[in-house]
Length: 341
Image (cartoon, rainbow, N blue to C red; front, side, top):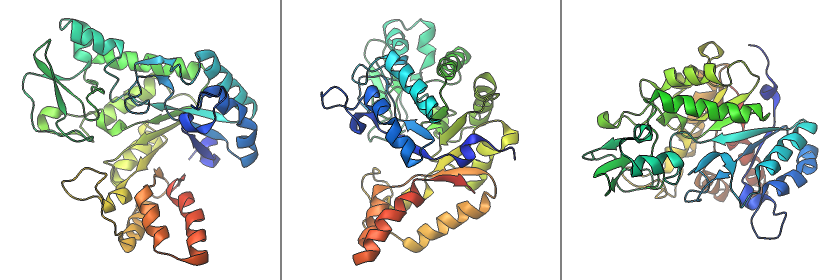
């Protein structure tokens, strides 16, 4: 395997709202992040995964994007973003953008046009049906919302203000790739791809994750954008198994650098309940079994592990004294790290 810069990177996630406020308005911003680059460099950070800073009504903390090529005013300006990228580069720190292309905000120009003009090309950028089926939103309730003006329902697997994009539309895909190249040309270090395993969905067949066109779409994306560049690409893949993860991360497959997997987080989910209704007791033996499975079955492929606050709470609260402190300090390093498996 050819060695890449990210094989030895230390990636630090920055949630901008709470990281550093530069102007005293109580909200973290891009200049605030820039002001702390020396501190991050001293810690040994070599890449920043930046949670969404795009223009957004913030219905879902920025994961509802109204304009992919503009910065939310609460965070600053595009000039501030350019300065962050440039100043980070001087310190050998790369900026990893959070890419959200499973859905947009309902305030995105595409969706506004789709609603106002049902005959427009943008109408087919989203998924509409005359009658809904029984698919559920991850945020609870139906995954379909009725649009009175057109008399149809649109699909939203998250908030009703986050309509799902229709990846079957080739023109839409090309617009997404153009947007990605806009950011690549600015000098970013890569993308963390939000719920990327949902873009191949087939709602009429109730296929949500790992649809048959998922990997062809990712190969197409790779070729149209980052494939010939030395960038880090991480897929958030809730439905991945070790076998599926190999398709994403095998360099010969020309898809992504690595994936986040979430099997361990599901240990405390209750069947038929929203994800925030979790069991208080954690099966620690099963947790070890899952970690071992991913580390052994993926061999040299790339993957990552994301943590759950409930898992950390369960493990730490089961200890006492010095062991509690040691567990609390070391567990996040295990659960939040990306590594070669």
